[in-house]
Each structure stands twice: as C-alpha cells, then as structure tokens.
Image 1 (tube, each protein chain N blue to C red):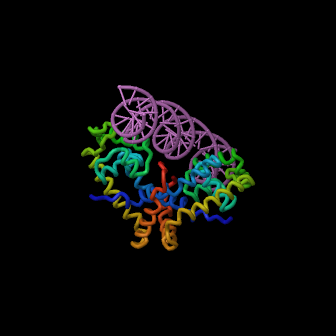
Image 2 (tube, rainbow over the protein chains, first blue to last red):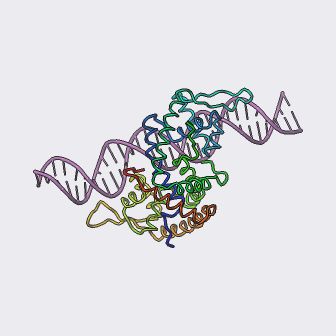
Image 3 (cartoon, each protein chain N blue to C red):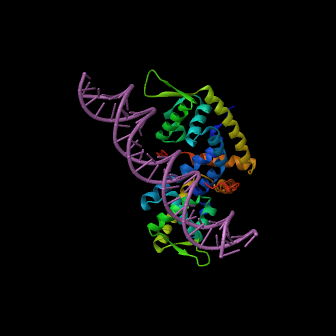
Amino acid sequence: MTFHLPDFLPYLLNQAAEASSQEFQRYYRQKYGMLRTEWRVLFHLGCYGEMTAKDICTRAGTHKTKVSRAVGALERKRHLARTELDHDRRNELLSLTPKGKAVFADLSNAAEVYDRNISAVLSKPELDTLRSSLRKLAERPSSGGQ
Amino acid sequence: MTFHLPDFLPYLLNQAAEASSQEFQRYYRQKYGMLRTEWRVLFHLGCYGEMTAKDICTRAGTHKTKVSRAVGALERKRHLARTELDHDRRNELLSLTPKGKAVFADLSNAAEVYDRNISAVLSKPELDTLRSSLRKLAERPSSGGQ
DNA sequence: TGTTGTTAGTTACAAAAGCAACCAATAAGT
DNA sequence: ACTTATTGGTTGCTTTTGTAACTAACAACA
C-alpha cells in the first residue's frame, strides 16, 4: 500500500524528460519540420561522422524502421546522402550534406544554449551526479529495441 | 562545434526514461492490455483517491484527449466508474471499482519491486540526488500540455 | 551450384498520439 | 433574459509509431 507515484523512477524520469525536451522539440519542429528521430539521426551523423543506419540503431537504441523512415525524410530534405559500400552492398554509409551540416550547426548551437538553460536549476555537483546516474540507468539492460 | 550528444540532458533523460520503463510497460501491457496513459490514470486514482479527469490532466501534465480516451478504456474494462457531480454536471468524479483496485494493488506491487530493481545500480545518496534533481526538472516550466 | 541462414533495410497495415473542431454546462456582462 | 466567454470533456481526422512480413545481399556449407 501507499505507493508513492511521484517517486516512481520510470514515471519521474518520463516527466522530467518530457518537460525538458518540449521547448527544444518545438524549435526543430517549427524551424525544420523535423521529428524526434530525425534530429537524433542528424545529431548522430553530426557528432560522430559518417555511419550506417544500423550503427545509429545500435548507438541510439532505436528500432530500424524508425531510423529507416527518419533517414528517408532527411534524404528527401537533402540533409544527408547515402553512399553504397563496395564490399557489401547492403549497408549504405550515411553522411550529412553541406545543407545538413548547416542545420546541424544551428541545432547543436540551440541545443547547447537550451541545455544550459534547463540545467541552470541545478548546482554543478547535482548536475554531475545526475548525468552519471542517468548514464547508469540508460545502459540498456538487454534486448530492448524500442 | 564538438557538441556532445550523450551529455545533452533531454536526450540522456529520454534514454534513461525509455530504458527504465520498458520492462514494467511490458508487464502491464501483457497482463492487463493497458496503455501508458491508462496506468497513469489508474495510478492517480489509486494513489490519490477520487478525482476528475481534469485533475489528472493537471497533475500528470497530460493532454485531455489522452486522458479522456484512457478513462474510456478503463471504464470499458470496468476498472473505474464515473459519478456525476450535482453542483456542476460538467465534471465527473472518477473512482476505482473493486476490480480496478485489485489491478492497482497488483501493479503497484510490481512497480515497487521494479523500482527497487532499477535503482539498485545507484547508491542511496545518488538516488536521493537523482530524485530531487528530476523533480526540479519536471516542474513544468509553463503552459506545456503534452 | 543449391540450400539454408543472417543481416541491412524497406514497406504495408494496425494501433496510438496529436490537433482542432465540437457539444453541453456554467459563468459573466449587458 | 440574452448574447458572449469559459470550462470539462468527447469525437473525427491526420500524422506517427509499432509490428510483422518482405526484399536483397551476403555467408556457410553441403
């Protein structure tokens, strides 16, 4: 009995995640008509350089259909291009076009500002502990595949 | 330049939230065919007692259409009942039926176990800091209405 | 070579979420 | 009373997501 909902981690995490991403979401949505998975793909390519869709799935823990659609959308917007790999024509290397790089530059700037904004309610040590705890929780426990 | 994706709070929070809710989600989904918003409604009624749909919207920061549909679904499953209020026939007070209470009892037990499980990767002080930081972040900054 | 298995990625269809318009009850202003 | 908000809640339609089935390229092996 007496279960305390606002202390339940999955719930609390969700609330915090939702609250903290809304404004940024509106930004990339309005300005570039992007969806969540699209900026994720964009940011993966922007931060880590060229990679295949599969790599993104693994790194981000995102299902391949979601990534596939996001890649399609970004390609239509000419934000990324695919290059077939010679030795295995199943994988295609994804890379940002100049236009994609410009968008990434803008969005990563906005993200940085935005991140500073929301983390302003926390002290430096709180912030460090938070990040480290979240990383531990985020470690995908097994299978999964959202 | 050099934006570091895995430190970006909205992203990190999302990853952690996603990872930490998956297993529990499977549980209530499989066992009771419930959706996320449905258990939220159930838990609000179970934890705080009778309230109107509007109250749930406010407390949980959830859009009214989502709540409306979840209430409908829970009503069809006979987990909750509505009572018209005399002095204002617009609001209806929602309350769990015995069946709904039983489901809540089972799920809140499961949730408690589950919460203990995932928080096992953190020390007690880490956990406290985490909860308090998350609460600060979750404080809906304004409007919103997910 | 032919069969079976795997892997990367796409597509089709069903389920869920978001949004805006809607209805009915009340409140406010005249 | 009478027009005009406002509020609680629902519904219809569109956009996104989830799931499973599918294609194509490769790998293993008989």
